[in-house]
Image (tube, rainbow, N blue to C red; front, side):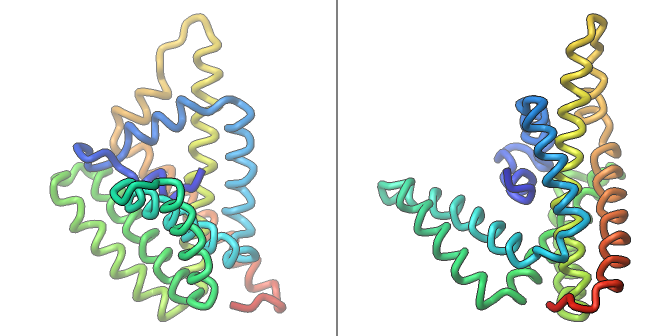
Length: 221
């Protein structure tokens, strides 16, 4: 489960992929949810240590998705996905700085579009909010590369942790006899809820990572 693809692969008639996110939450078993929280915690706190691997994985999944789309049109989704996966994974290694900067820009776009959605601005113009974040995230990535690393890893970890915790809460709620679908209401009826906890968790992750990076003299970009 790639956290960026969860948010990027929205349905054609939906501006924010809340239904897709809820489907992921509702589909997870308790074991899968715990795994998501565990990997998300590593992603969130120690992403700065393994950011190169995470960048390769993210671009590999992007290549897989794009390759499957192209392969579907030319007659082979399997080979299209494999070629896309291998190609973007390999290309991301020598172009690591650009790959991480691109992920930082995407993370910025996700955060600003989430803010746009949270405050109830016109949903048909949410792309404007996303563009602002993409430009800002891209610029910051080239000015202070470390921020880009912390931004995309903290956001990715936050998405996994939040998805896992909400899935566990949803499983627990449905195990009760007087279930009122409170978790479902929070996710689907309150625009501010998901953006608020996502941005808060991302901020916490960046603060923690910044302290750990400062204390690690052997860390190199």
